[in-house]
Image 1 (cartoon, rainbow, N blue to C red):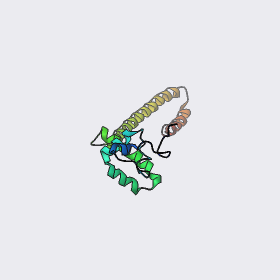
Image 2 (image 1 turned 45 degrees about the vertical axis):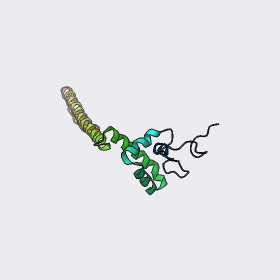
Image 3 (image 1 turned 90 degrees about the vertical axis):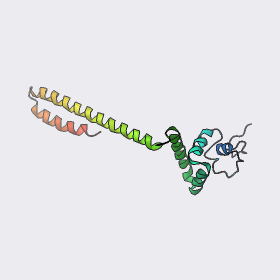
Image 4 (image 1 turned 45 degrees about the horizontal axis):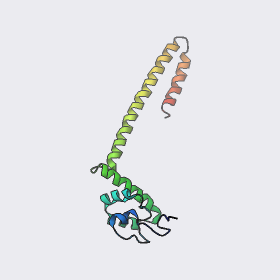
Length: 147
C-alpha cells in the first residue's frame, strides 16, 4: 500500500523543498501548504516573493492564519506572473471598470423602463385612469430603486 503525505512517513518532499533541492524536515514550514503534487504553487510564489521571505512571513503568523496567507500569496504571485507591473491591482481596476460600466447600463435600462411605463400610463389615462396612474407612478419609483 502506498503511503501518501508527510504524516505517514514523508516519502516525498514538499514542493518547496523539491524546488529548492533540500531535505524536507519533519517541521518544514512549507510542507502543509505546498504539497508535492502541486509544484506550480510554490514555483510562482518563490519567483515573486522568494523562499526566505515566504518562510519569514509564515513563521511570523499564527498557524491558524498561515493557510489564508499562502492562498493570498499564491493568488498575488499568479497575478504578478500574468501582469508584472500591476498584479492584483490591475485585475481589481479592471473589475471596478466593469462594475461602473454595468451600473451605467443598468441605470439606462431603468430609465428606459420608466419612460415606457410613463407612455403606457399616459395612454391608459385617456381611458379615465388618472388616479391609477399617480398611484402606479409612486409604486414604480419604489420598485425601480429597490435593486
